[in-house]
Length: 556
Image (cartoon, rainbow, N blue to C red):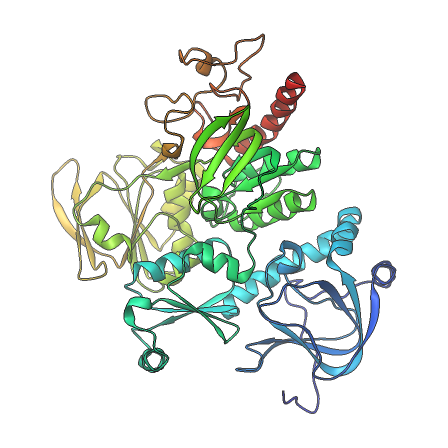
């Protein structure tokens, strides 16, 4: 790689590239190994797991995107700075390459040692975690990592991009509709249209229309273990309730496994900003909240697996067996179901035709990028719709909020309603419902009707965001636990009154979060009677772990 005669260290941006103090350097040095660093040495490469935490002692190290192909220098670091990003703590493959740009020396601290150090040193831990979270966001913005090549009209391309975005995986999308040269290149490589989208990783690995699980394996997301050892606590769902249970379960010595079919964070993870969560007066994004919780859970030894979709539940010899989509069966002494809810779909003609390209049920940076500078409509009158409208207003040409009721505050928090009414980029349309979708291939307009006057008119829109309530995700449970008439899981006294056979009937049983099956618990939005708030979900996840301990003690 060709280097300029004089390399200037990159400035610290928003705390992403802090310099370690002398005390911190000495602490790390006691647990690491000093190594000479010669120009063009590769400390870690794109696509490889990061086995060490590197600190620059002298000389300079550059982080490079597309090393050996594009050779795009992202940042240059001098003495006192540390390398890497969130992958160092999560175990994912590296999305960039670190190359020595100027002779010097580095300190290599084994990753396991780093995890122990940051767990015991609050200041060092906060410094590293904050820097890594910011660096991950920057990498996503730079389009580092793997490449997804496909058509904007392809449902599979949309699926892969959504999976990458929900898991905050740095990647670049190349649209075949706008880059004819890439399409010709794929044709020369023998890739047919039916085999797109393709994922290109490290400039050499080509995955042809991979499943989410195949993409996850390629970039190092942990897959469910095929072992048949029994875990103490299996958590199905990785929203706030599931992640809280993972942290408390693992920290209290339970062998804990967490499964989620899409991404860590659940429904909350799709929120651009959670403003009413205790302890975050300026708000926090759902993605950052999920990443922080994930690191906490892994620190205590929890095993988190994504994607891992639960398909069936059965009982065998006192254990709870959950079979996954890819055929693996996980055995557990206790089970916590926190699968949450799925947003309802609009009952409108041709919805399915547009869902793959123009209809969304979340509003994150991914969706905002998909419809950047376009007019959009948001359907719904609750807090989720309001938060989506506010977030999108900063990224798209215009936002129309379609509300079925005659008052915005009927189902929305007042502070949110006031903010929306005062925003110049949002037009609120009350007493309005969607009647028809218009467009060829992608959405072009929405025909809406006024509930009072009956008048119909056409609203220009290139995308539609739907937040009209939700339904519990419990179909996979079949008839294994008692549900209410809407499909929510019954717990505690409600489970006792369900009339199901086998309901624990000893004193105090079922426990408040226990289902009609002993040792199976439910928490968060999927539970009948739950309060649909992040804070309450976190509380229920923590409380469920306490009840798991009581159940295991009673079993001896």
